[in-house]
Length: 389
Image (cartoon, rainbow, N blue to C red; front, side):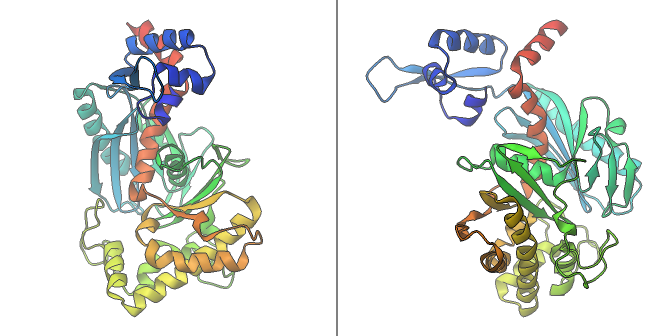
């Protein structure tokens, strides 16, 4: 299943070569997966050598699917992806969630997830679980938000409120997993992923696996101090990266109104005339305040990331989320700081990578993490379905 998830038009023979099993064994397994509706045949594919053409296989476009949902400070979103990671249904709504009562936020999110789940089922998909992305610290139970300063939440039982087969995960972790699974990177298995909206988060992938830390809180890059005597941060400390490169700090420094500050609520899908879009437009025009704000934010981000690179020695740093939209103006400052501060002289400018997923990374990562359970253990899923039948 993983070979087929990673490949295009792979035949039985190709799978046998990849996994090291005999063709007869692979053929038996493929037949079982076809009957279960996890695979589909895509017609004959002629190999590069002399011989009878094989039948191309692919993960099914119907069958198991994953539901992902995202709680942002200024929006809510939900989507469904199939086993290939393709978004099949999506819903999104602006929402002023800062200090909003958690039950109200979760009730609205439940409506969005119910809507996309119903659409998915009509398309022949079978959602197997839901993963909720949150901008905060998540407990070991993968169900409770312990602390989300930018939402004003503490000890909120999110999974319990949204029903069974629901898990909760930090948004930065899901953005990193999306890069690992869906980002189109060739053999990138050790990297730091950094993204930002109101806050800044990072996640570390080591040998193809998410590194959570001893207590599950690894990756709080936004609260790394870059100037200890700097302004007060929402976490209670001073001079954190978030106070220089977070969305609100950037907009304030550039003289651009944050979403909602002008009485308008923009659609988060493109942010309409909201702060981030206005900041990009100002940068494109060459506005001095916008360019200076982005340059200073890039320098602060580079200082924080240079410490991470020196400590962890990753293959690459991937910049995702809304930061990717600002890459042309933000990354030169990041590169300068990395070049000046990283001790490994083999570090190259091209090791700083802009995500192709952009703002969609977190939501797609959430949804795909749910359906990955089927890819990781298809036999268990088949047994469950058979037992219910």
